[in-house]
Length: 129
Image 1 (tube, rainbow, N blue to C red):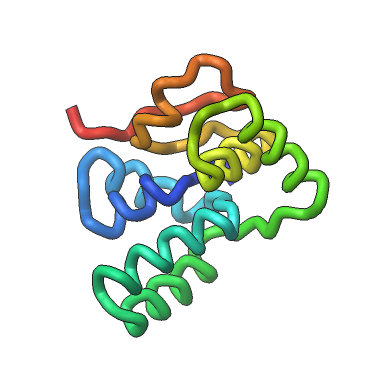
Image 2 (image 1 turned 90 degrees about the vertical axis):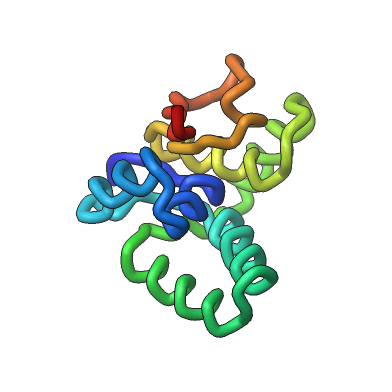
């Protein structure tokens, strides 16, 4: 594993958006990590926008290509602590806690995450310029 992905970057990758698409493609051989909570975010967005079949297909692919991390009790408590001090989405807190637990940079383009300077992990901005 060389990086942690959040739902923003995976959705951008699936949409072929640069530079997220190229950056994620370059990491796939190393099986980047992603919280199951963030995978669920990807799933519901895909089902809502493209139907259940598309969401099922993508989830099957994510299970093969990524190291999906199922948070245990300690990670959930750490995530709750992050949420208590940061005014950002709960899914974002899971992404941050997962990256910190694995000591990996978090790849994202999510403005809520990128606006923070007080995170427990390194963050790589993959928004298009």
